[in-house]
Image 1 (cartoon, rainbow, N blue to C red):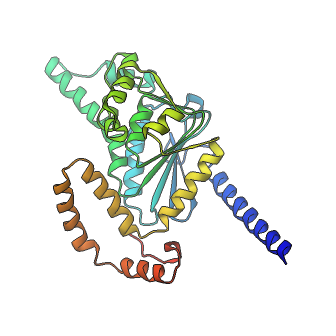
Image 2 (cartoon, helix red, strand yellow):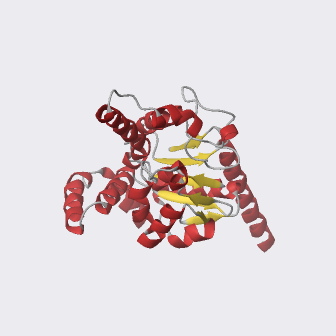
Image 3 (spheres, helix red, strand yellow):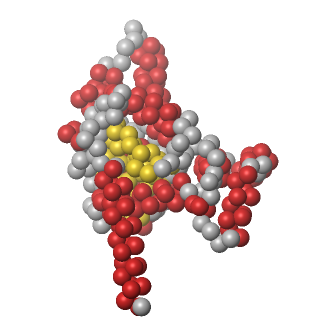
Length: 309
């Protein structure tokens, strides 16, 4: 009898393992998803959207198309009732090499304008446009997990600090590269990284020296919450975590993200007041009773059929 139980458990676990591997393989793509030219979009599991940076031949460097495609992509995701959580990763050998300097040179180095005031005005418009590329991730009500392997340089740090949960592989490294190319990071790192890590001294060191931060230090400083042996293990872990989030009430999950971000940028009193105003409407949902019933019956929230949001 014991041997039968053990064999049954092993068979079940192998089945789950193969199911997980199939989902991870489904996250691998052969090319960008039209109309995008730099992103591949897939749906490895129900309610989960996978956004993959897809310029592997260019180390996923961020060209002109990328900056607008990310905005279009996440605006679509924000309004998609079938999506409850997002996983972001990079195709190829590394996550991203950051900005594509050759492709972006005309925008950054040759802004239009007849005089200093007009050149400056147009440069500001360009910078704020690029800032929106990552702010749209933060503004998306669906939780965004980012999975980093290999290098995450420059603009890559801007991207991941706008995400909600950060995971990486043991070979990952992070670099605030901008001072090495003669500029101050201007699309999010200097504003978000201090709130992610919490150590102003460490943030200053990374931003002023452009030194690399490796996986172990990223984990101990709080930049990432988990480190995996390799990319395959990381993507499986990201998918499992995304599934846990997707299985909860979307009213609860999205309300939690919105209020976490609001509270980060406001006082405790302001955050509590905003939360009270938020929940005076959001508590009037069937999701509360459904979740409570599942809890009393000792069932997982993932067994509850929540309406789309």
